Amino acid sequence: MLKNYSDDKTKLDGMIPVRQLLPFWDDLTADEKELVLNNAITAHYEPGQLLFGSDGALCLGLVAVRSGSVRVSMISEEGREILLYRIGAYEICVLSASCVLKQITFEVHMEAEVDTDVVILGSGALNILMESNMKVENFVYKLTAERFSDVMWAMQQLLFYGFDRRLATYLYNALAEYPDGRIKTTHEQIAKNIGSAREVVTRMLNRFADEGIVELQRGVIIVKDKEALKALAD
Image 1 (cartoon, helix red, strand yellow):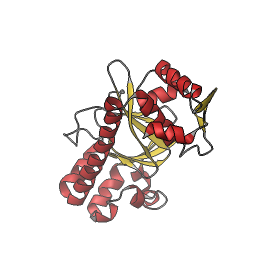
Image 2 (cartoon, helix red, strand yellow):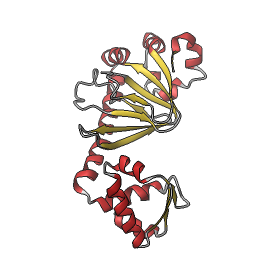
Image 3 (cartoon, helix red, strand yellow):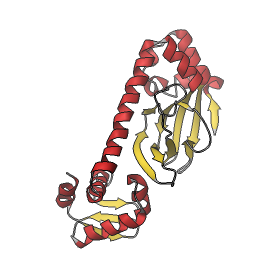
């Protein structure tokens, strides 16, 4: 459900922390701030709902997450998905502005992982800001470079690391969210996140279980030997 912020500019500038969502806000002129206020849209997405990708949209613009989490991925012609990175609250994605950033030659898919609220600054307004304000242009290209670094890391994992290491790395990183060692996920979700098939994930998890590294339960993977998992990931 979309709402144009220009309906209530005071709310955008006050209750909605635009200064925190857009790091370059204080570097804008009064006219440029007005441009943002007139072209910013808020949207709510439910888990699994697509923000950008296969719906035919050519260019969304700058996406700033207010709350929730968005997964950014690539999908092959065969339907295989590779997770590139995630963006959470107060993080921004610009790879959805491919019509503004001509250097972006591949399509990304953006999907809400949980109930997510975002602010979208349309590509037209973003393009004007980049042409008129060097600090906005520098911010966008710096963020683009950082995101490409994330993309290259994902490609490195996929191309050069064995699957056991990739799976161990994924599980070990998941412990940050599940410090008790009980990782709530499914084999299908893991396969989606690391760009593999569910059957391959299941076989490797069974191997980890046979080695006493994990214990498998329905919807839960219990890490039994954190050090062994870390050794596999390193």
